[in-house]
Image (tube, rainbow, N blue to C red):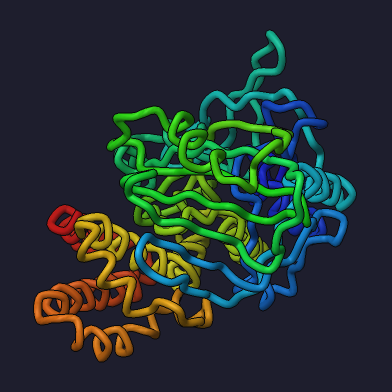
Length: 429
């Protein structure tokens, strides 16, 4: 019997295993991939530094291909908007391998080609998992199971349906992306991660060009899954790869990816169980950023686990409280803002974006919505219709913040709180 079993050797899984092994816990990581495939994942490969610096976390230099200084946002008819922040552009495979081996070096046991099938539940507590290695089915037991299995949430979604954290992820809560890594014939500016909002290219999403080096880029396109009625890859080649910078470029890798883009899971714990990362819907739903939330949630969970007297729901509950405080409330706010933004026609969206065009802002202010007053003042010159719309949205944002910042400090108050949350999203989304 282990102290902890971590299901999934992705970013959050390997980091939490590494942290807990170092503290003396007997940790086992399992993953359906072979060891030498860990780290292969389709994503934007961009890690924003805000929040991880306070954890004294910085990716190892061997895993970083470039460090950009800002996100630069483009839209038709407006001048670029600059959001200043340090962005690590990662070699995603090396990044994954680095943290897997760090977890192993710290004492974790890694079982590759081991597929998690279902939780083992006794009463109201998770006590283990059923898994498959080759043709052999096994039962693995631990005092605590951590589901870090990504979008599939292979353990969480098979827990009893009346548990707080069993909510399924619907198609409306998912985004589909297609991306390629390309080697260019020319050098490009490595200072900026370029983000493009163009509804003619992708109606409910965006595309990006992120510089991983002077002549290496991560280029992709993503949109909400429930509204796709076109070929995403076809649009990628017709509208993006047709850009002259890609002339005679070489495709190094490609693939599709799925990620959650919804308000965060309201509860991520049960007795004997924690879910982290994508499996807990901890992706920023507006920009689709998942690596940074996975790192932060892994550190929060590790600290709570280390200080828990046991792994019952009452002792693990502070993980929910801390995540909501650090990221959950922000992600819920972005979910509300994203819904508002999607509902605008492009003429309205253009007016809103023009308030900020040709200026630079700190990413921290953007993430904390500290630019809302500036928006109102500038929008006064754009017409009453826009002001009314903006004021309505700011009121909604305040409501979201208030709800999530008042997350209950114990599971006894959760049902009352979650009812308010469900009613809010039912009325708004």
